[in-house]
Image 1 (spheres, rainbow, N blue to C red):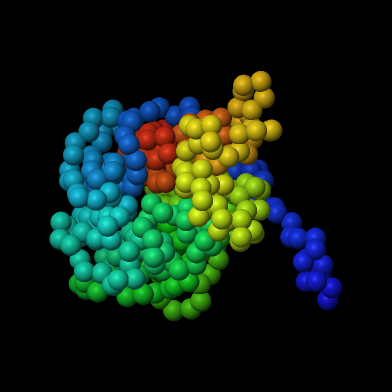
Image 2: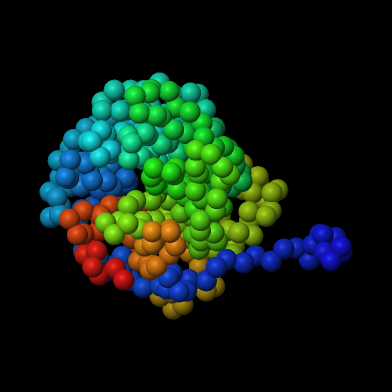
Amino acid sequence: MIFDPILDLFRGKAVTIPPLDGAFRPNQALDDAPLIATLPDVDNALVHDGRLVVSSGRKLLSISSTGQQEVLQEFDAEICATAASASGTLAIALVSGSLVLDREALPLPKEIRCITALAFAPDGALWLANGADRIAPDQWARDLMSKGRSGSVWKIEPGSRAPRKVAGGLAFPYGLLANSDGVAVSEAWHHRIVRISASGPIETVVDNLPGYPARLSQTADGGAWLSIFAPRNRLIEFVLQEQRYREDMMASVPPEFWIAPSLSSGTSFLEPLQCGGIKTMGIHKPWSPSRSYGLVVKLDARLQPLSSLHSRADGIRHGTTSVAEHEGRLFITCKGAGMLVSMDVAEVR
């Protein structure tokens, strides 16, 4: 109706988030999964030269299925993204804005300073996700609270050293899955997966996810794994509509206490979301609203959700940022908890 825009000024807009149902039905699979290793800031799981490789702060580690560790490389800044090609080429991005390709630094445009994901295409082209143009990757909460839309996706053609911008104006792209036709991108602040091709408009593949999606990786059966690093909840969605409140909060409150998603929670009495429906008689309800969560989603070949693995509000394995499938097992980095966990792929239905 013609009066709806006027009425919205008085009645506001409904704050809704999708329920955890269907393919997202809650369980305790992540909390029940065997622990492989405890590593600070564990992130970026991938398979390289037949070995499972993860990052832990400034270190790149090889880890066996029993938890034995070997330091492969160490850098002067934290590792924020990794990728390995079929031919064995290894790409590593640092929070300082550097991109290292087989131990050689590549020059990058000034606009690329927040690399959140890397992915090699079958032809050897390297795709880059640049989360935002003015912040470092670890300042993602500020970009969300500022309602940032400055993310971009770039491509380095085989044999080239110059990145070419393919798409811009994205709301913090955080995951990439490349194929011969283009690349699938998880767009965190829009809670969706989009597909970007060399020609044609951006196509939405999955929309209205119940959390903020992070990295994508290939499954052995032709589908994909999607890690979701934090949940959506009504309070945060409401705060995102209140510009003056957000500006005051960011100016006067330490970032770890913002009403914003988090990789982990429950460590300080100063954190928001601790009253009412969170705890009853000292027990943390698994279904209570939470700033952090653990969630991994299995997608089919069309990138549609099939099933999921959870660490709920009362769990600890939160901040799931990457997944790697290796030798019939699934390895999941829970960055918020500093844990690498594993399970048999056959157990994921």
